[in-house]
Structure formats: structure tokens, C-alpha cells
Length: 377
Image (cartoon, rainbow, N blue to C red; front, side, top):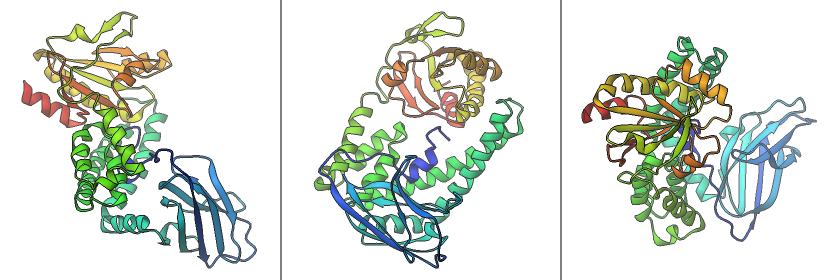
């Protein structure tokens, strides 16, 4: 799992379409069985935002929202009663036009959505792959619980929560891979469907999917490629293409834990993993165990690790290096310039370089790093 919640990133894309002429949306619906004289409200907000776009009261079980939108975007709808208790959330695509939502009171997340081809397609996809989605949702809840316990244990290596996280992470990776396969199949079979662009954006949350997404995008219809959201995907691909397998990794100079200046080219002649992480990132701390396993096994063969922390608090960074037994070279990138040069969108992230400094692997996590190095050495 990555700090951007990769499993959920497969489910949803946080990207919005580029600026274009705004158009009006009308969102209306009913909640059957709503209690009389209730004092709660419905809230509409963009996915990933803490601030609501709008709110509305139920009038005899009916509600209505009206506003302007630049195009399809992920939105949330939820009910909050007078005590502040929040209902289950309905995730859907908000877009210009008329959208109708019907649900039973207290079961908003099971609503039927009419008047929207995009939402109909999305619901059909979810229904077809419900087992995968439910499994990921259950595992995510368990992961957050274990993550909190690991944090409460001050990231101790012997924390029982660490082993729990490893187990959950392994299962999450398997289910996420299954969902990724389903998304790829969907795009291949729906080359003129707007939902395919959202699936491509979700896949692009993992930079290692760059070539795959580029090939899938090229097979879409010209009209879909040239749509506002299509232009957004094209731009994302162009940005990622600045750094790919086969490229020479950009040089950088950063300070290590002792304050000494370290250059990437100091490692020429060796295989080196440039590993981006942070002390506050629980998935990173868990991943450190896998990096340590690979380092201990192959350092005699000339394998090196160059850890690049994005920490602001140097004391926390140094403590994590010590606590996690990170005996390899560690440097810190507090202003984020190196992270930007490497197009780091989430952590943990890594690049495996050959002795010439050429990128030969991206985001090799878990056992993938060890297995790759075993084949090399």
C-alpha cells in the first residue's frame, strides 16, 4: 500500500477535467422512509475535499441541488442528522445535466442513479467486480486500524501491528492487481466510453503503468482522446514520459544524516535503489523491512540503497533511520526539488538503477525488489 492509498486510487481518480465552459447540473432525488420532522441535511462535495459544494434539506423525502460544473468529476453525497452523525456516503460522477438519485433512508450508498450514462456504466462495472471491491474495502479498513496501532507503538520493529500490516498489504496487492486487470480489460473493450478515461487516470496513479496507459490511450477513439478529460490524460502521460525505464536518472546532491553532501553519481558502477520515503509514512516504514532484506542479501554483490526522505523534521527522519535499522546511505530532500525531478506523486516510490545510472525498474515493492536483484546477481 502507498500513502496515496493505491488500492482506492484504483477505485477512484482524484483528477478533475481541465478548465472549460461551465454548464449547469441538476441533482435531485428521494430518500424513501425519511422520518418526519427530521433536522438533518444532505451534503454534496467533491471527492477528496473537506468542504461541501452545497447542502440541502429533505422536503417530504425529496432533495434538490443545482450548480455549475466544468465536466465529470467524482463527488460524494451523504446525510448528516442534527447530532452530527453521518450516513454512509454515495460516490458518483457529477456532471452537467439532470441526475436523479433514489434510495431508502439510511441506505444512501445503495442508491439507484438515473439520467447518467456515465454513472450507469460505473455501477455496472462495480457490480461485475463487487467481490474485488468489497475485499479491498474490508482490507483497507483493517489496514487503517493496524496502521494506527503501529503508529501508537512508535513504529517499533517488534510491534505486532507491523506483522499485521505486512499480511494485509500482501492481500491488498493481490486484490488491487485483480482490479487493475479488470480496469485494463474494460478500457480495451470500451474505446469510446468516458469511463475508460477515468480508469486510465486511476491506473496512472502508479507511474510504472505509464507505458501500459499510453498504449491503451492510443487505442481510444480520436473524439475521446480529444475530449477535455482525454486532454488531461494526454498531459499526464507527457509529464510522466520525462522519466521512464531506459532513461538516465537525474543527478542530485543532498545531505546525509551526518551532514555530508552525497551525489547520486557517487554510486556509479553499482546497482542502486533510489528509495523515496518519509518517517511519518506508515507504508514506507513497513516497506523498509523489504528494502533491508534485499540490501542485506545483495550488498556483497555491489548493490546499494540511497534513501531519499521527504521529511521536514530532521530529528524524526534520523530517529526513523535508526529505529528501522537503515544501514544504507540516507539523505533528505526537505524542499522537495529532487522528488519533483523524479515525478514522485506518492510514497513509498523507488527507482532501480544499473551501474551506468540507467533506470531498469520502477516501484519494485515487497518481494519484487528481492526477486529482481536475485535475477541480476
